[in-house]
Image 1 (cartoon, chains in turn yellow, red):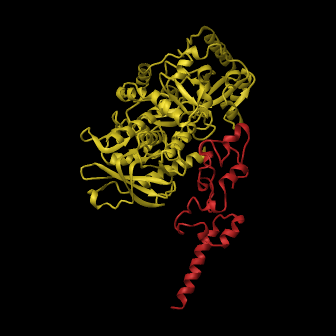
Image 2 (cartoon, chains in turn purple, brown):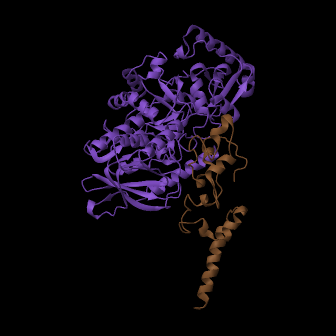
Image 3 (cartoon, rainbow over the protein chains, first blue to last red):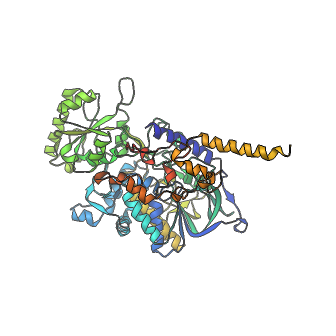
Length: 500
Length: 116
């Protein structure tokens, strides 16, 4: 944890230094010295950037380049549970799950609390089955089990067998390269290069950049013939930036993101006059563990187990939330679990081993001290200093809900835990939210074009996709809904550029 | 004075060399130090070595074999991991003059007892 924090500080100061770099280069196209020129320029090698590269390759683009700031590919996209919500897939049909684009959009609008963009959500959901097939064509392999994520009215979170975004990123990277896409690490995007009328001509890149060493490498100008796609992700790892937007998210709050999630792409687009949307809507993950850094193993364990497990307040020995409510509902409630002095007192997720062991995540959390096994309710109460009788009663009450199929306590959807009683032995993980996702970003339309603040019109030759775009999800994004959205808008940006 | 200048330059550059060497260095790299800083610093002394520099002597495939893990932990092989395969550059985790830790440790409580 300490190391993670020192990284976050580091990232924040690094980003602050970055902010001093020249803001924009206005020039007539004649007097810029271009070091490189490419048909399509993509910044970021996560879900959005790779989906765009693969789609552009499919559409016959001959010269595509992806610049990645870090020394490794995949950014934040490779660090998650590898889930993607799609509606209307063959796997859902095979498992007898009824779902639709409309239902998926409705669920997301509800979590968006009146701020989400129905138009953008619908565009993404409609492209879902195409994206699902595209990933399979790239060689991504899905599990036969579909995950039930929070806030959904149908089970739709398709998960790759690695149970990590790596299961998408690596096959997609390989596929992109098979189309001749050039992939370059240690290339940090500095700023856009625009003509006097605001048209994006290309970008300035710091080649040979080492993260945290802001003056490493050399500046080069890269011309983009068909357009620039900014797919740089969020700013969750940039503490000063996120704290300015939400004072509750200072140093002491952990973060699941990759080091590189510092918001460079966002800041560069803002300085070119792009429209900022919902920047203060920053989401924390309710499945995170305080006993490891970043996303780690705990998230996968609790994601799998939330439907048939209970989350317990250590002061009362009782449940305090619907364990499958949307992320914001749960994270807000979890962060309120405090001891008598007001210090964090993380809640306990209590899962039945007989069900938890069906997912490989159990082995990981036990081995690396992110969760522990107990052979009785008494042992849990003793170890974590919980009031025993309320805890016992709570477990009994919960099991009666499993039996009747109705949670009279918090209204949880119980069809995912049918017949799965909470019996010993138990696996227990602590829960404490970590900053996970930035709903806010710059405004895009259904063509993945970036919208200018001054006139609401697209900025010519500038595209954005993924977490760097804002306004899609509103106040809170549902689990498993960023991956398909990143890819859908990456695909869209590629199609727009190839038509342009 | 004129005669003194080259000598001063030599002494001064030695001081710079020693200042770098006063920082961490791996004793098993002694041979590399003997053949001069530019053996690794292939992009000039003010820049980081290229990601190919270490690969003059080290082979990622061989390292992956050396740090192989079995069964469930196979994907936790730092030189052939689930996230980055064999593509993570050496300097992402290892430092010659600075203390670093594996990037895996950002998120995981892994135990790499032989990590240097």
